[in-house]
Amino acid sequence: MTTVPLTAPPGDDTANPAEAVLPEVAGPRPTPVGLVELSERVVASILNRCPWLFRAVEIFLAACTVVCLIAIATRRSPLPLLPIPLFGVTYLLLRRLRTAETRAHRFRWSMLTALAAMAGFWLVSVVGRWVS
Image 1 (cartoon, helix red, strand yellow):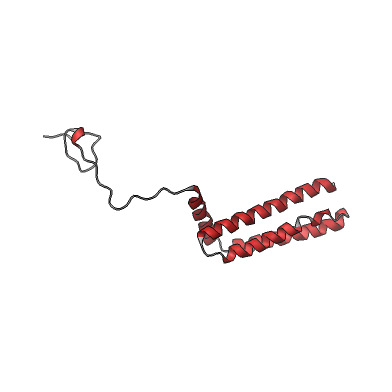
Image 2 (cartoon, rainbow, N blue to C red):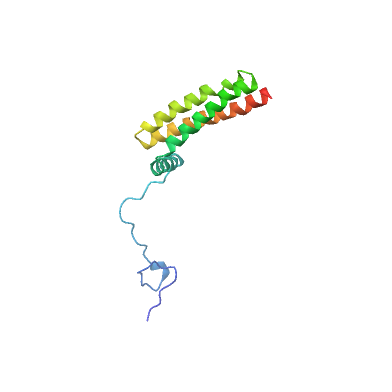
């Protein structure tokens, strides 16, 4: 009667662990996935799962622009107009993101859209400190 050591791979009935043969991996080994490819996959899956996301961002940008326009009358200052061009750039980048076809282009346009929107919101906070 032979005993199989615990370190032997499944299906290997050798009694000596030094004689154990590792199973061959069929096919080519997968290449490691980098951070950029992983980010591209995540962005593509989010945009595919949430087709309403584009419309929601457009509505949110329009609401922020209207708030900036209302702030002109309430603050009696033209400073709240400063973020509006960045919101316009964000809208244009969002349109480019919607028409992007490859995962790489979608990732790049989404990053640019997010950066432009964040810069606009940062400018809103700076203008809020200046005006008050």
